[in-house]
Amino acid sequence: MLQYGHTHMNCFIIAALSADGYIAKNPTAPSTVWTSKEDKKRFVELTKKAGVVVMGQNTWNTLGGKALKDRLNIVYSPTPLPATERLEVTEKSPADLLKDLESRGHKEVAICGGSQIYTMFMKSGLVTKLFLTIEPVIFGSGIRLFKEDMDFKLKLVESIKTENGTLLQEYDVLATISDNQ
Ligand SMILES: NC(=O)c1ccc[n+]([C@@H]2O[C@H](COP(=O)([O-])OP(=O)(O)OC[C@H]3O[C@@H](n4cnc5c(N)ncnc54)[C@H](OP(=O)(O)O)[C@@H]3O)[C@@H](O)[C@H]2O)c1
Image (cartoon, rainbow, N blue to C red):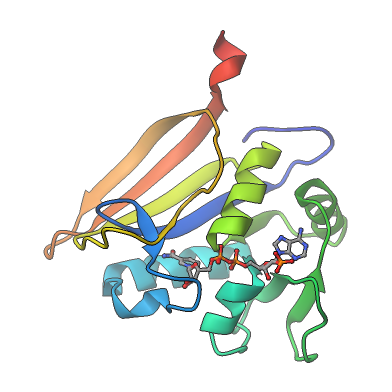
């Protein structure tokens, strides 16, 4: 586990990608229509184990404004959302959010997108792992996993090919490229 500052949390990104690197065709498109059952199963297992899911408001809206069950749902939004059980709205920096969650006894956090939230957390240097699913589809255009320039070195820990050609990949974040220069 990487340890930045005073945080000792496991913070992982979990995302499904088209074979050409997109997470969605547009900000309102739900991703569940083109992802495999194996991806959905891994998502449920890993996020329930973590206990906390973090997402942006656009992604929250694609879920129909319903919190994922058995998990604390944290949504980044500039505006208040209708209060429901298991939902917290935040505007905190990634470092402050992780410190807050750690002080409340959490040890693991799943960063569930979309692109704005993946980018903000990856750039913070606090992400320790990426669980990426590559689905056998092509979008041609759309929303990429990240939307800004960045340089990270990864280690492929596991790559599983399913019967229908989905790739379930797990990466450790080793360092930023600049750490090695
Ligand atoms: N394939 C996958 O695995 C996967 C996973 C998740 C989502 N998705 C897809 O990704 C798309 C959505 O991605 P997106 O990048 O458009 O949106 P997003 O990251 O889900 O959410 C963006 C929202 O978060 C707010 N936000 C961002 N940073 C904030 C901060 N520091 N404080 C307060 N609010 C903040 C933004 O506020 P402002 O309006 O002020 O900017 C904006 O309203 C959807 O199509 C969804 O289906 C795919």
